Length: 325
Image (cartoon, rainbow, N blue to C red; front, side, top):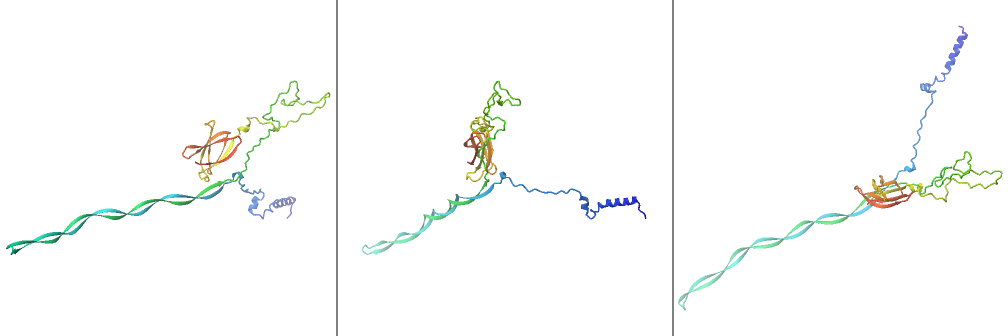
């Protein structure tokens, strides 16, 4: 059998084509189908740690022992006597006197004389008499007394972790080139020339000439607010509201009173009112403008009672506790 040049080239091309698949011939079906595809790995990031501002309150349970006197009614047996009238039949012997007469002959008078001889006999009789006697009886009499009762009541208190607060606020510096609130820009004096490209609010710099002597440069103006200059009365500092935070507790000053409603009424304008409601821990948080305010606390029956008068200063941060009445 003779091989031609064309048959040799055909055999070499078949061998070259099959050599690329010989590497995967021993692999399984999964490697044949996914050998050249990109592999994907999944990674689940751990859960982030809870933020310090959202820390859960610490729950503490304290037991308070209380004593009080409870009225108790007891029934006691008592004996007493009652007079009772009765009719009693009695018997007695009544004497009865009788006379018997006898006669005899008196020789002196030669006549018959009659002599009466007395006799006493007794006859039994009966009579009814009213007699009073005492009968003893018993009865139950209520006796009221007081006994001491001691009970232990749990009191739940929630403590929040302390938070760092500061009552000092820093006023940010104005941006470079911007005027302060107490700066007023003046127009350039008449006869002065403004160099091209220079704003009209900045005076031109006096450049030395050949006939002039060197002059001292004016002091540089700082863009930072000067400590010697005070802000005007209508600055934003007075208009910044104050922040009030507190809690409402029961009369024992330990148990929080959840759901309490608070009303803040402006002393100058009674139509200006601010409302706040305590959460499940008895705490509330709100902001108030500066001024005098009347604080009213809901009694629970739909009516509010005046609690106290507050004087709020600008930028004030105040914490206080309200005891329910």
